[in-house]
Image 1 (tube, one colour):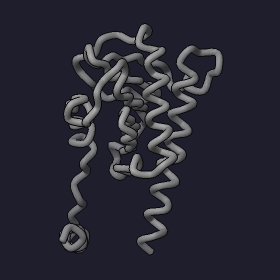
Image 2 (cartoon, one colour; image 1 turned 135 degrees about the vertical axis):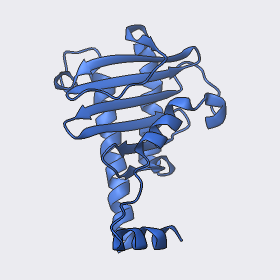
Image 3 (spheres, rainbow, N blue to C red; image 1 turned 90 degrees about the horizontal axis):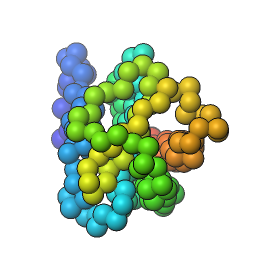
Image 4 (cartoon, helix red, strand yellow; image 1 turned 30 degrees about the vertical axis):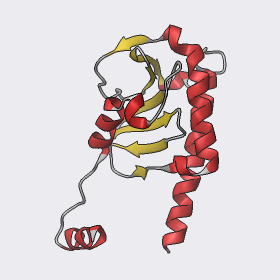
Amino acid sequence: MRRLFLFFGRLFGRKPANPYHKLRAQLFATTPEKAGIAPEGVWGVAVETGYGGGSATLAALANGTASMYFSTGGGIIGAGRHEKPNALAKELVRRATDFTGGCAPADSFPLPRQGETRLYLFTPAGKCVVSVPEAEVGDESKPLFPLFALSRELIAEIQLVGQAKTRSRK
């Protein structure tokens, strides 16, 4: 039924609604209980980067949930149902526990500015954030590099899941 609405929407010039802000709000509003997680330290990670035309969000939870979505539309939801993204999401969350000391408490979640990457850690005490220039994300000398490197691995696996879904639809 949804495909039918999308077809007629495109036919008559309507774009399908972009769910980015709703998905992002759901991510930041979720609790370990809602996600079925018994939190022992960090139970979730969100990595967001601001670009000229919008932003991208990577979500990983301790239960293996892994998704990626873009403010310009599109994304891959539910990649954690696949073995590699599931394992990488869990590993990212597990390793993030070592980095809570460098985060500031966060009670609001503004979108990152262009050229900025924000790392949000979801803990039993609340959410915390650290912000870095995007140029530092790939700098091996920076303390957060291991998390960003693992995030890139997760993104690559999520993209493979998305490509496989696209091929299977054809």
